[in-house]
Picture 1 (spheres, rainbow, N blue to C red):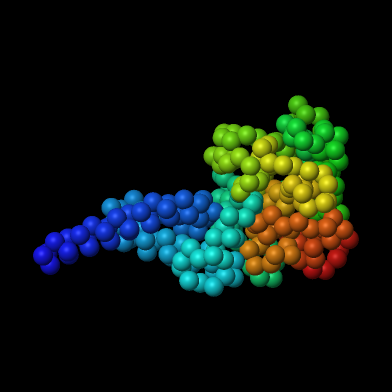
Picture 2: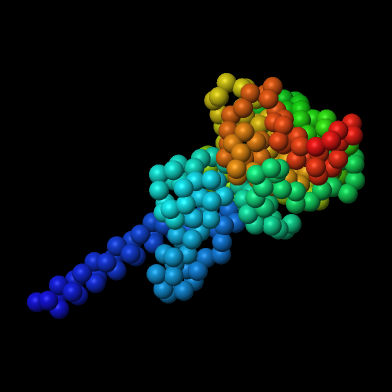
Length: 274
């Protein structure tokens, strides 16, 4: 009888463990995409996979100054499910839209343009905002950065050769980082000197500052920050380079920390000290 109970208990524990790994696979995959670690789940060992997941979650919690429980707790779940930029928080690679995490003092710099005059264009636009409005929003988003640094921008025609190209894309758009539809991943960008900036075309984009939808200006400022070479700032929710979408009033853009970060990378337009 004892052997039967032991056997049943073994299979019950095995079922729960297998079920939890299945549930946690999405968490594991997503955190790996955000650059937190490589999966150890290629192994047949569920224990190794479980330990890997705990370690990866702990790394995510540390990056965002959460309590380091190693568990997919309420605070971690809430933050991980917030709409955000698709760029990695930790990984460093010029071949994909992945940047390293920021230091507490300044956003990290993972590259910069070798020239001081950049041309930009829009390849495809959102059906929710007109061409003219989109162009004006992006121009203002560029200006949020370039008014502080010795970098000039020029809008060129849609089919003209440009350094930075903006596109509103659907799903898999051939850059290795497919969009997921409404919510979660809103946009991503590649750092210098790639020049691609992509917005998920299925999001509820808006030019308004009323708190509804996702404000294109705020997201564009963030993604241009990546395109100019800045990484994510996971420590400061007031930074425009914070990974998760945060509504901000237009008049506070650019926050002081972000201004100092971009000047640290490019120098000041007016020889201002950081």
